[in-house]
Amino acid sequence: MGDLGTLPVVGVAILWLLVAWRYTGPAIWFVLLYLPIQGWIQLNVFEDSSATVLLYEFQIIGLYLVVAMKALRSPERFGPPAVIWYAIPFAVWVLLLVPRSLALNGAVVTLVGLRTDLLPLPLVWIGYRAFDSRRQLENIGWPLMLQLAFVGSVAAVQFLSLSSGSGTIFEIPTGYTQAGVIRPPGTFSTSAHFGMFILFSIPFAIGLLGLNVAFWKRVCFIIGLGGATVGLMANTQRATVVLLSLTIPMIVLLARRRRAVLHVTIALGAILGGAVIGNQLSGEAFQQRVESITGDLNNTLVLNPTERWNDALRDPVWGGGLGIASPGGNRLEPETAMKIERTVNVIIKTPESFMPALVYETGLPGLIFFYLFIAAILYYELQALRVLRPTDMGLFAAAIIGFQIAILIQSWAYDPLHYPPSRVLFWFWAGALLSLPKLLAQKTGRQVTTVRQMPMVPQRRLVRPLPSGRRAARV
Image (cartoon, rainbow, N blue to C red):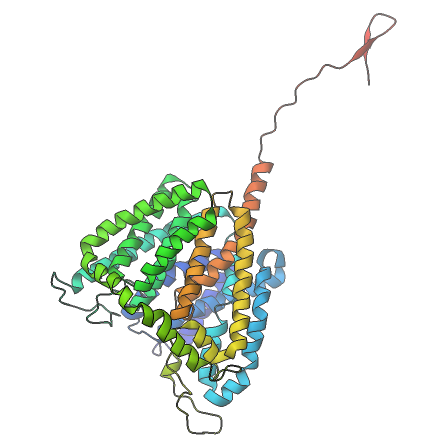
């Protein structure tokens, strides 16, 4: 990125703003399609694994500017959803911590913390305004599913080139850093990011299968679901395996309709088909990874998170400053405002647990305000699900909520809300789900207004005889 020069970068930024202003919806959908392949572009086009990760964030910031300006002109069309106001307490608290963070950790680390904690939250707004019609939702669904099948295929090819029958590693693809553990990253920069994407994609595909769509689109959804299963078995991320085993039954419980059970059964058939293919590719490695879950269960769910919590609670009110537990923060060398020598834990390696990381930076008040926003989102989503449950969008809404609950569970031991793709998909689809009742009302309104009017049945009118013998109609 440094070789590009300032002028071309500014030109690209202006071009993106113009495109986003003219074609706001397609620009949003482009970001959704770019996100799963950005790691491959980083590593193979730009030959970089750090600076170019900001490209999707610059795209998102441009969308924020465009939607905010359009909201001033047309609040009915582009205004934020009501739930976004519940993010204000957390945002205000984080901004109040900025002066203290600047004094403790310096400007760069503080900016990293602001980017980590606040940048993704307005994606709820973007998701809420991403779709004007149900057809647009369908039309972004099938390309995402075909892309998912492609990513799963790439992971399978990477796995086959990495191991022989005896498990010998022959080559390491770009971005593959865990030599000795067969976990291909697909089109992502790390294996963990690919696992997070699968955790979203399988429930998302199940939800799409519940929609009343053309047959060829349904075929695309099934292909994507099978490809995701193949990718899961090649990637072998244990947390994803465990969470999916909880998420799929949860989706059925949330949907609570016989029709939803039927479509989940069809989805399980597609998953089984993908598992048969995946078993031929990586069955032994996948089985070994699943069997190792029980051995690490206590460390993953109890010992490690508890240790991180105890360390984070050493400064429970104010935290240790923004950025100290953010991705990328441990690469920086902070200085205090008065050049005081650093203490041992001024910079802490990014903890794997999201909740302690939030306490590290913002203290317990920040944690409480953040989960107040989460609780508000879930409350509004459950209200939307109640409206959508009798329709074909009920399973889709249940699938999104199931994915989000899985992310919240995963946040106890890991930090999915700190990294792409989860930090984007979680917030974006929360907003999109809240817009579904509006799309349903639009569809219902069109059906009502387009009902064919029946011709009026001619009626006999009562008449009375006149003195002349003629009959006159009664008025």
